[in-house]
Image (cartoon, rainbow, N blue to C red):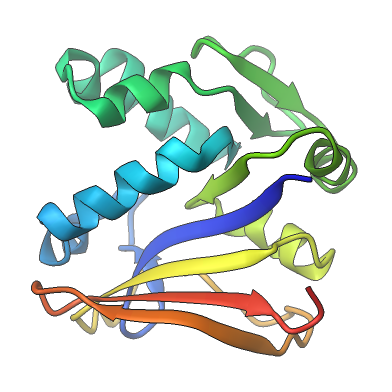
Amino acid sequence: MRKLIMWNVITLDGYFQGEKDWDLSFHQLVWGEELEKIVLEQLGSADMLVFGETTYKGMEEYWSKGEGKNDEGETTGYMNNLPKIVCSRTLEKAEWNNTTIVRDAVAEISKLKQEGNGNMFVFGSSILSESLINANLFDEYRLAIAPVLLGKGRLLFNSGLNYQKLNLLEAKQLSTGGVILKYTPESK
């Protein structure tokens, strides 16, 4: 059975992006060799990536058309070659290779979890994540906490989430001052 894992970089005050889409400048506060190694390990364990529509569009633009396209590194290979799911009720076509559009995220992700053995990672995608959290579909939460108070932007966890007790699996300090936290729901 696949594990569904949330991966996000957030600020200490809980924002996963600034006030505008793709305002991720605080990511540079935690980026370095340690985090790059963690990202590559995660991508190496993945057999599928899952995105909401907004995150998908930004990732597709970056990795297949933008800056990431010309990078010959391992991350680029994973991002462009892994199977991808974009959860959207309105997107008509997905041009990024190996991408499938899913209309009912909860039903399809539940089914996909049963069909493989690797990890499925959800990056960004706060609206999608809220639906998956409330359906108790996440097996693990992995967060990189950036050492900054942003003060405004888009929160990763909004009001209206179902109560869910979590167990700490790991806390790892990075030399950049960031912290990696891994949690699993108590019921899993």
